[in-house]
Length: 562
Image 1 (tube, helix red, strand yellow):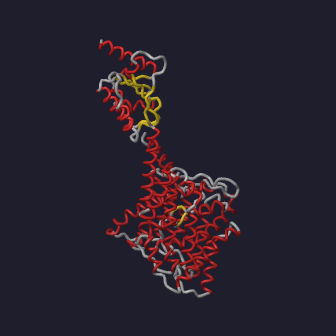
Image 2 (cartoon, helix red, strand yellow):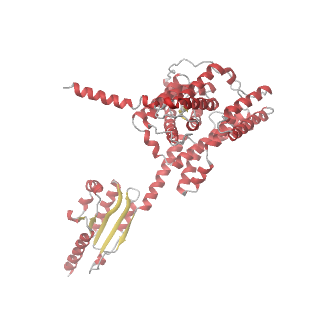
Image 3 (cartoon, rainbow, N blue to C red):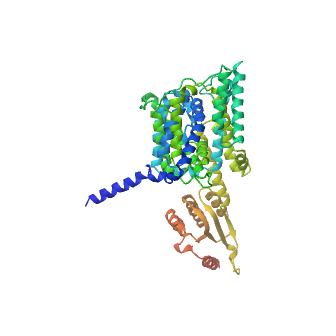
């Protein structure tokens, strides 16, 4: 008899695990789309090369770590992730978090942090929290993006000036100090390199949309720097092969100090990856069709495994990359083959062209990231938010400022808190209580009856104000509280009703409650609203019946006075 439940448990476990694992459906349509997937993968690989190098250098772990991450994490996320078109690797947002970790704990800590963060992201996916990103308000996301773009731009000032970066400093002060430390003849050369890169990246797409401006800029400006024999900082030695995987050494003393950075990185990886996947799902390919849905929880587990794999190979944490995902979709990608090919293209570069990559000037990568940062922010989007409502504009600006001044995760937390408070304030303003006249022909004693209609949301944000308005009523004998227009009722709102009824009853005012919604009956009963009434028959579903009962109370009171 016990064999049947055991078999059933195994079936449920297999079914639960299946949604996180690769399947043949991941490659539906590959027979007809493999050519466009192959070309899209090559295109994205070319676009990703300079970005992977630049993000590796900017984070402080080195160009080789950025390239290794793009290969290893890009391949694992392509196979294990929840999107058919997502392209993953090192990103600008992750660089912003990693730079202070490198400054405080050294480059050797990044592989361990990558493993820790990857495990946390996997746990988020398994726990089913993938859809939580849908609750992040648009102004928070855009303010976060603006702050990241500002930080990335400021981080490139040392490269643009040919000076050493100052790790651990406030990003704005570090940029100012780096600029003040610039010397001749280096600074004119590096600025010229940055200007050349920016010009090429801006002109190339205007000549043809498919031209990879960043790669063309790398090639042309690096060749020019070699021919002119410019004495400016270069990337330096690069590995000629992928390193063997190994588990990072565990230092118990340092482990405690890495927990909070790992949590911040995991949160950022989850949020950015899901946002990227959501954006990718809404993009339209060259054929005019949407790229298709994604699975949030599987996307998180896939990204977590990608960061774990990158850490084992000496890389850095990875996330879904919105820009590379957009290039992938617009290049015609339909299946995961394109993201896999993108990783293989970068792997081939490691084995075949590492020597050439080492000669790229750091100012070239700085120029690429400066242009990339400016493209992260849409002027139309900023204008739309600032013109929407004052509350949304305030959340947008607050999130951006905190991102630059303090910390990315703190910015998201404060942005969410501010958005939530402003939303609650809006809900509270839509909630209220009004006194109404008794419908129909007036009767003697109606001036001693008050009908109050509660509307909107009776929740903790509005309960106190509603309680005060009703409790201040004077010169009445019976109060009818109408709840038929209440759309939301929580425990605080129900408790406020109990307080209102109790306060009025203590003053000798009989309270009648009318129109409790069926979905609110349980909370009204459990919190004690009905129990607080003078009699259980003081609960009505019909207003005329409640009015007639109130009039009977007034007549009876008049009789007592006589």
